Length: 458
Image (cartoon, rainbow, N blue to C red; front, side):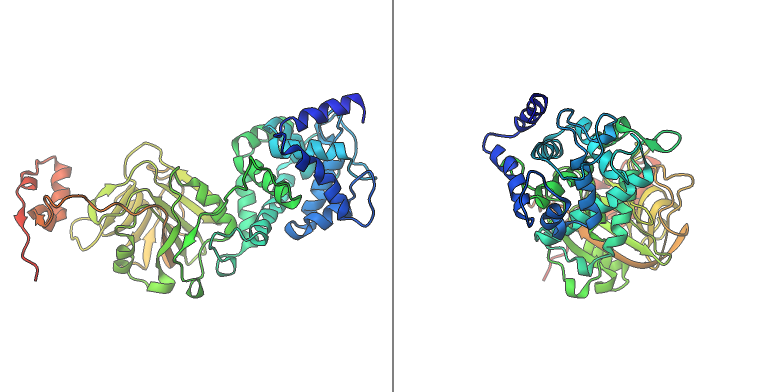
């Protein structure tokens, strides 16, 4: 090992704790043990023997191409414009250590050349990649992550065989992640473009770390494996065909606000409970935060996150943590714009106020609306929903419901303490329409403080 190479490698090793360094240095010998013959380098066949069960062959080849194109003296792959073509003889110990250090402990600046090298069709190509090449790399990477979750038993109670098409989900998630790129006008991405993207889109580093740590069996005490899926509990999988696939779930779960880490619980499904608005409302009540999923007859899958437990009343509710989203034909999330506070709406059995479930927009022009007759709804957002900035979510502006699911995704609300005021009601409780109309007109609700005793219960 030359002086320049040894300095770079030693600096990379210094990123790891003293007890972790033997693990990192031992990966080389472990990979060599996976091959038929041992030597001074790691071959593609050795890498395939180690990683093959948890990644597609094309992903393994991308990793090998990246490793073998690293110049330890420069600590950058050929894609950075400084280094050499991939070595036909294999990957050296120094190249492997630099690769491990930059993927597991590197900065966005250090990871960008690695991503470029893995995105290129051939090592030593031009110092730019196209968005299409990045998408292909991401599809291989996301596929590998899903394989790892399955292979390592980290599904957290989810059943991929009772969920949506994983291969379609892989393409949707790869497209969504790539949509965050900011390429040149010609559609090309250089290293600085990739660096900016990796810095903003944390999943790129997270998925890459998982692939390297699990695929090469690098167990580091200071970096536990990330939990990419929320726990799933109390779900009758034998009777269910979930509207989400694993990659879509991997995308949606991190969008929930911090602290929403309670297990997901299915509280309503048209497949299990029938097409009943009343039954759906019963599933929503006193459940805490929920995630609504709808598929229309055009095949579009979309929904919304409600940050609060739903209440049946003719007023808007919720807060700016609510959001709308689409799953298919594209994965996207639309958060509150601050324009208004029309986050959530749920009403039933009233004559002068709309009856149904809505999120965003205004009466008659919701970003997402499900009518109380349950078979129909609308997403009237031209050009965009005022509350969430979302476009039309459904295939048609006025859509027909195909199926629906509601998942409770947070802790249920605590029961109210104390008995004071419980069991008493106002005339405005009997007629919430009147309360809503009085609020709209700015009238004072004097009867709020004059509650009549509830009839004795037998």
